[in-house]
Every structure is written in structure tokens, then in C-alpha cells.
Length: 110
Length: 110
Image (cartoon, rainbow over all chains, first blue to last red):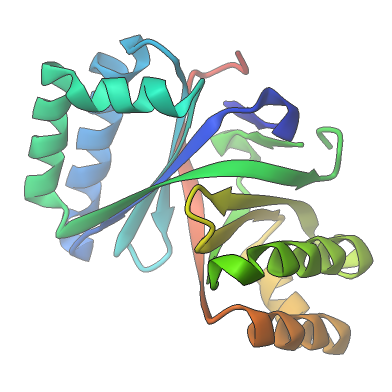
């Protein structure tokens, strides 16, 4: 579970993975495992949230990090890199982009 | 503020707007206004969360709807359509995709 609040000031990684629909389940399992075994133990990790598109051609990880520096440090970690390489064999491509949450409506959790 | 919890079962719209960096501020203002004036009053609206990429070439709206049918009904609303047309004049393109949140880590809000 994650809370989206601009006041938290997190670096938000929105990573879109493109995948053949018949391999979407396999990719989802890999990403869940990477989260549980590796990512959640990285310094500055806040949350990971895995989404499957209706047509099963995309998985989006909406991930919160304390800062961009923490996210970049994770990218240099050998175990995290091994997970990313494994994911790259199942996804056809992926597009990680760092965002800042600017505004959220409603202001309180409904 | 929004809460991401697979148990809520929302339809998640992740809409990526591509924009010239010098027009990103203008687009953000338009999207905030569309949210406050129109979208939040549509049946089934849950939340909208506007994110700006570090390089200012993308804005992502992470929006929660009670169901896909509610989201599609909004697309037929004339006032919502007018807002979308206005946004289309400032963004160079946009890519709305419907997802289902499959898993969220940690299980509780940290």
C-alpha cells in the first residue's frame, strides 16, 4: 500500500515494461520477486506498486524512493543489477522515468 | 492524496502527456484546472495525481476510477471532452492506458 502526497517529496519512478501478453504473468512474478528479495532492502526504498494493463502488453511499476540519489545508488548495486538483467530477458523493452508528484486531488485520502 | 491498495479494485488510468519543456507549466495548470472544475465531479472519480518528469518533457496523471465504465462515461461527457481538447492543444501527444493494480509493497502504508 502506498500513499501519494506531494508533501512527502519522494522521487517517483514510473517504469513501463512492454511485454508479449503471453509472458505478462511471468514478468509480473519476476518483478514481485525482485521487489520482495532485493528492492525493499535498498536504502531509500519507500514502495513499489505493480500494475497490469487491460490488454496485458504493459506492466507499470509505480515506485517511490526517498530521493533520486537513493534510486541511482540502487542501480549500481550488483544484486539489483542482476534482477534488472533477468527482467530485461522477459520484457521486450522498458522505459524508466523519474517524476515529482506535483499535486494530488482530493487533498485527503477518501 | 491517494491510497494505492489492490483491494480497492479501482481502474487506474495512467495518462502520459508529452510536452515541450517550456510549455510544461502551462499544461500542468490546465490539467489541475480540468481536475478541479470537471473531473472530480464525474461519477466514479476517485483521485487524480499529477507528476512532472525531471526533464519537464512528460506529465503523468495517475488517476483512480471506481470502474472502467465510469472512466468511459466521462469520455462521453461534453464538458470533459472540451477540457481534453484544450489539453490536446498544449501537449504534443498523450497516451492514456487503463491498468489494474496487482500488488503493492509494503502491505501497509509506511
